[in-house]
Length: 130
Image 1 (cartoon, rainbow, N blue to C red):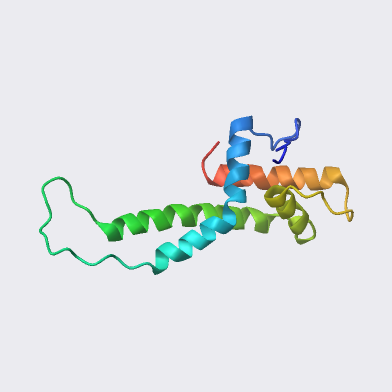
Image 2 (cartoon, one colour):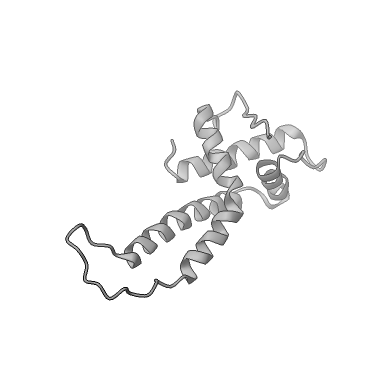
């Protein structure tokens, strides 16, 4: 289980709950990508031939669109935030958040820590968590 350490100082600090929620959104990235593709490719089930009741209209196309929009918004926020991290730090920050791996030795821990904080803060901001 990752420790989910957040830096205590700096302009990119978040409330603990928001920080962890954002981390888990990033850790769910690969599943969300697969789910997005699966939902986009699925087709509606066959009609049962019965007329719709008065209990409420079901619109599978609209529900599919809403689901795709939500998943797409999360994926886009993560992709956009990662693109803002300089290329030389991207892999280290990505692996640290996603897999809880140590930072590479090509730069200092403080540098990677700042970029990780920026990355997580940017995602939280784009997803309106803060």
